[in-house]
Length: 519
View 1: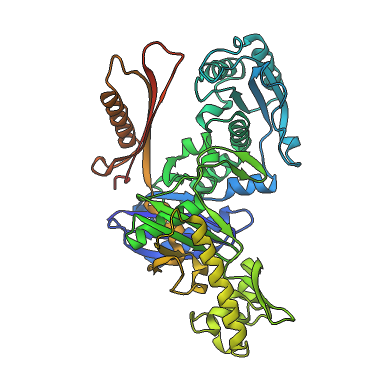
View 2: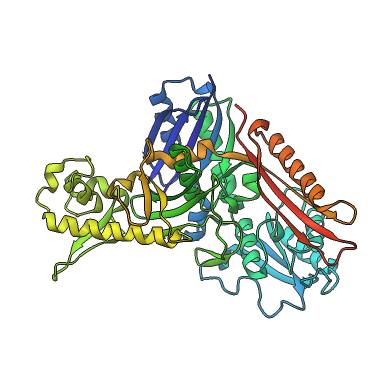
């Protein structure tokens, strides 16, 4: 029997689960997240292995979902000193890199340089690539011992020749070990937002090295010596350690993604709305054909606008630790502030003096946590008013995520979901599956592995359907090479974009395939 381990690091708890070959949950553990993160991961893994009673050497796959990159951006901590090269002068000189950034990030940039080059929307050169200026910039970065470079170019998503030429030059001058981020490999159309995402990816270089190595060390420490390690991406798939170190920005928001995937697996639903209720916030997302629905608008991370792929998630200030207050006029408020990780000492059911949403759920008989006799003095009228507020907030989140007025299936997950009633307006069915409290770690453990392919094809030489089929098949083969079971691989994304600047009827075709990891 082979086993798989799923770990998800949250702000309050680190969750760990162990699944058998049939994906049955053998053990699920919540362990306090530590300040250094690593000891929290190690503790959660240790307790999960102990609870399951299995030989840790028989765990052959280990998956980690972490908030480390998100936290580093939000807190402005542990970011790598980088160099920024934008190829786009003279067209883009009016708005230098990081123009719209909040304060606190200035120290992470050694130099931001803008040089001639870039493209028009149709692929026509604005100006030739200024190789001499780029070489001078990379020489300065080498002298300053910079190890991570972000390169962006005007309309690089249409044509990335200048970015790739700059990358090659960078390695020639600075060496093969330097970490290079190309904006065309991270974001989509929109120079500023795409450049911002590339800058953040470059700045997360040290953070990525630290948490990936910490995960590997934790596995070794617990005797998990035969497992291949993977990191959760924010599109619901996995990437190996090397990819995670190259593209750490793609782990941002993987927590909600894991919860959405876990909710779908536990409920056996491939299309539903998910409410993931934690201690402080509730994340509302949508599972669509088995994968999280992707956001179609620019996403702000730590005050920085980006346009790389992100799950479509709405967060509201409602959780198990949300503080309940009664005003002088008799109205009751819930949150948005919360006792957070201190719930076990501050909530009334645990002997504290702060009334929380969890206390309300226990008072109304919806949950059996702590000592229910400690909340018996909460007036029933107050409790019902508070529950009406909780219910209304959840229903507003459901309305925000729906694309029509039709009722939808709603899945409740997360430890804080005990505060929500089983009937919600706008919901066809409200499902709270078994193991709902660790849906995030389960989502990490059952995630699929992906393969992608991108090719330029001339439809005058190869008919469109045939060309797209070729790219899809190569994406499928790449997923299998990455470790996917051939019998489970399916195409989850495909698009073709006409390229006016190429001869004939040339299009850029992209495809993405995903499948279950082979056991």
